[in-house]
Length: 392
Ligand SMILES: *Cc1c(COP(=O)(O)O)cnc(C)c1O
Image (cartoon, rainbow, N blue to C red):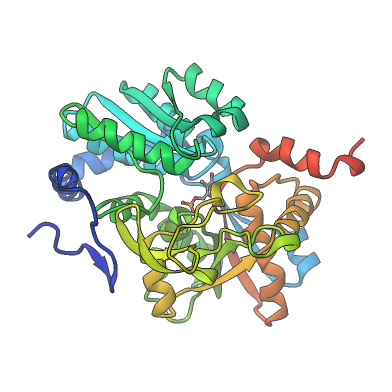
């Protein structure tokens, strides 16, 4: 019975080392049990409400709407505890870890956002927490490293390879295999082998469910379009999923195009990549002619990933979702516009989704709901470095 729905069309699957298979099956069993357990689900719901701050508001952005010429609603995930949607998934998977009787959770992190969300949930729910992070990333993301330590997590510097995210993942997997008895591996997006993409989408779907109810309260109908940025694809998957079979709602995922100055360097795997096997699943991957995985580039640290969740690959091929590209320069422009127009400083990731509205307005769309996946405090330093001349 288990391991039956491993695929999304031809994408997904579980291309993992033999040693991982029993661990993945154990997680899948816990996940199936969780979905049937009303008490557990209620406990998570209360935690999301009282600890994380759900439901998040659906906000009509009057000034931005006027400026761009399309009615814009923002789903305010930026108002959640820790400042982004990642806490939804961290709390959810922590419940699975507890059901499985694990004492320790481990996570990989690149920019540190998933590390902080995991460390936060671990502190609250009483887990030991280890976060694997490339040495290069540790240097670049000092504030998040300090935050994780303050929250009681141990940050493990990874010295192998390019000393970035993919090396951190390798190291975390190695540790997991050696310590599976008491350790849960908490993945931060809808990526990796089955069952992770389904688990993460399940815990993030609260975003789309709330949006559907809130929009109905406002307008007594469904919205014309939804827009979300796509890194690994978890905020987009959770936002889109409750609408995926609603033919009258247009869904737009926005990938990071990197800088206009060098369009070859980007993070837009669905637009510029090809299907390949990466980190345990078949999905679109940025690769060169020989199939070597390319390094991803984006001004938004959370979008800087050379692949994408396998379900998005399926949605792309079946035209359920249309995937566009927004460049660094456009995202930076809308980072500033949203701040000045609405008094909301968005994460640079979310600014990609906001910038895409201009393209939708040009296409003649009249209305869109944007998933504002996170707040921009973490990006202020990056922004002011680039815009040094304007803010002296
Ligand atoms: C991590 C992050 C993202 C990208 O991750 P997804 O899995 O694609 O959602 C987007 N926005 C913010 C604010 C993030 O922290």
